[in-house]
Length: 155
Image (cartoon, rainbow, N blue to C red; front, side, top):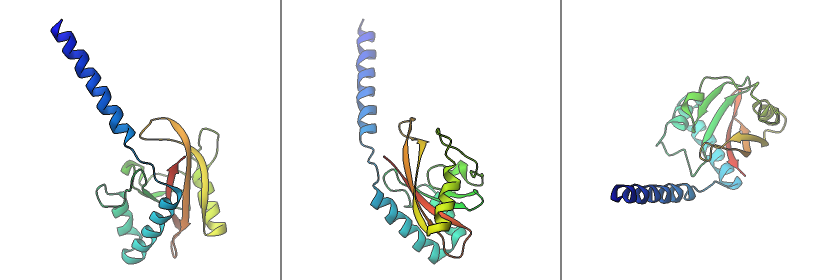
């Protein structure tokens, strides 16, 4: 009986601390996403796309803020940098669709080509909640490069 009580108490404590850890996740705002894009563009200007892409992808490099991270995608859909998941680098996402069939990577490239920058809304799996949620990414063309930089927020 004593072991059972200890097991229950430990389970409750684990649930409490896991819940507290999840509750502490602070979401970035639209303004913070745009500011991180601007900061990223300044870094690209200083060190070049290749070095910046490595910096943005490396964890602990100071380029992840709250739940925000930088991506760089070429207009052909190739992921060059991904601050949230290194395994995505080098893969092509031009034909990737969200749950509603939206070609969001293509849409980001299209809006950047047409306007220089802009927001694209789509559905995406939140790595923290593991649920499909509404996401919006601010993307901006990288001067002198065949692609763009972006930072997304969960709504």
